[in-house]
Length: 315
Image (tube, rainbow, N blue to C red; front, side, top):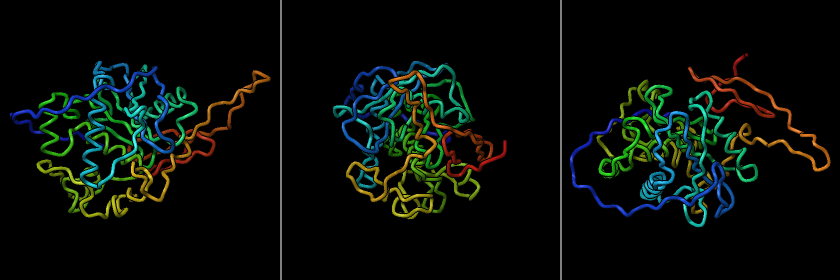
C-alpha cells in the first residue's frame, strides 16, 4: 500500500526533456500482439465512473512514468523490468469501468482484462493505472496484494502525481522518481512478493511503507533521494522483506533463476464452448473469504487460496 508522499515544490529552471510519443492505438481492453513471449508486465489504463479525463494513456504520460522507472532501476541495479511492448512501443491496454475501484472490488479489473484477452493473459503481471477522482481507502496512492500478480495505482489525487512538467522534473531530480512513477513501481514490487522494508537502511527506501514502518519507529525521510534496498538484504540480494527480486526471472536481460508464478486464483480459464453443441462447460469454482486487518477479499477459483498476508475466514 502506498500512502501519499508530501512533496515540497520549489521554483527552479525546468529541464527540457525529450518528448514522449503516445503508445500505439488499440481497441478498448485489448492487448496488442506481444513483441516477446513469456512473463511481462502489462500496463492497463482504467477510466472509472468518476474519471477526470486525464487521458494519461494516450498523451504520453504513462509511457513517461514507465521510462522513469526503467531508467531509475537501471541506475540502481543495472537491470530493467520486462514490460509488454508492441513493435517496440509500450503496450497500454484500456478498460472502462462503470463504477469506482476500491480494494474490495479490484479483482473485477483482472476479470475484465482476462475477458478481453482470453488467449494471452496467462503469466502476465497486470499493472492497473486508474483515472479516478473519487477517493477510496483514505489517503493512499495505490495498493497491491503481496505476491498477487497485479497492482493498482491512483495518480489523480493531490501529491500522488506530478502533472505539471516543472514539478515532475523537480521530483525526478530531487527524489529520483516522480510521485506517480514511484507509486507504480512500489506497487508492482508488492505484486511480485515484496513487503514493506523497515530498518535503519530504509528511511528513504522505495519499499518503505505504512503502517509497518511507523509501528517499528522508522520514519520516512522525504528530503533524500529514493534508495533501492541499500542494505542488499531486504528484497534485492536478500529476502527479509519477502522475496529476493534478483532471483526472479522478471528482468529484461534474462537474469534470474526462478519463474514468477502468477497466483492460481488469477489463472481463470474462460468457459469452453464445444463446436457440436451449445453446451458451455466451466470448471467448478469455489469462493473463500480472506481477511488482512480491515481489508477483506473474496477469492474465486477451482482451488482458491488466500493471497500472502491474508487469512481465510469463516463465512
